Image 1 (spheres, one colour):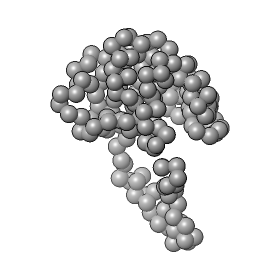
Image 2 (cartoon, rainbow, N blue to C red):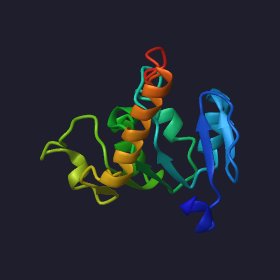
Image 3 (cartoon, rainbow, N blue to C red):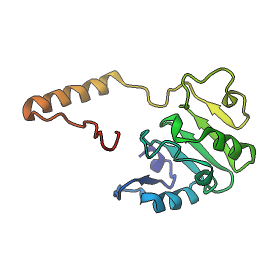
Image 4 (tube, one colour):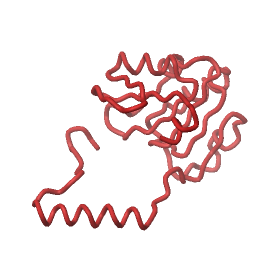
Length: 160
């Protein structure tokens, strides 16, 4: 919502088709190719699953327009670190903002700390608000007591 209010064109990708108001949506692997090829700023918010580990590899990063920028608020292993560094060094990617890493905490000798085209964040992209989190937990408990169903549970087959 905030990105649309700031007049950014917003597009999203998922494994299966979805419709979101004000968001151009893509799905499946062909959809991922389409999304990447038009994304000047790619914000990664995917869960880490068997299918998403290493998803943003050299071939997929190369699909981004020249000088695209990447923000990873998801999980570190979704992005191939070596491919990311090569894309940044070659100027294919202009900048990366990284809040998560394959190894956490990020070791002091890691290249990301000193790379001029990388901003390292202190794993703070989504701080938990105690009031809203408490309301969600209370609502889930209430729903379970009324229905006997645990809401919003993890689908072990999907991994999230």
